Length: 173
Image (cartoon, rainbow, N blue to C red; front, top):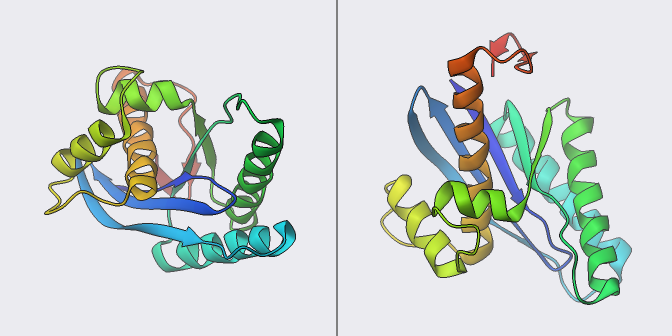
C-alpha cells in the first residue's frame, strides 16, 4: 500500500492529487489547487512551497510524482514553470519524499490511451478510474493523472521485479 502525491506545477495554479495504491486498486484521498494571487513571482513561489509542504504533512505520501517540463512557446512562461517545479520538488525533498518525473505525453498515454488527449478526456478518465461523483478541476485532474501514472509504472516494476524499486519508510514502493 502506497500513498502517491501527484503535482501539476504552474506559477499561478498548481494542481495536486493524492491517491492510495492497494495492489491494483486506486483509492482517491484528495485533490485541489494551490492558487497564487497576482503577486510578485517570489511570493507566488513561496505560496506553492508552503502549500505543498502542508499537503505532504497532511497525507504523508510515499512518493511524489510531478510532470516534466515541456517546451513552451513563450520562454518566460517556461522559466516560471521551471521555477514552480523547482520549489515543488524542493518541498518533497525537504520532507524526504522520493521524487518521480513523468512526461505529459506519457501521462496522457497511460490514463487516456493516447499521448494527444484533451484535458476533458483526462478529467473523464480520472473520474472513471477513481470512481468520483464529478469531474475534478482541470489542474487537479492532471495531478491525479500523474499520480495514477506513477502507480501504473510502479505496479509494472513490482510485476517484473525491477531493481529500481526503492524502500522508503519501511515500505516497498
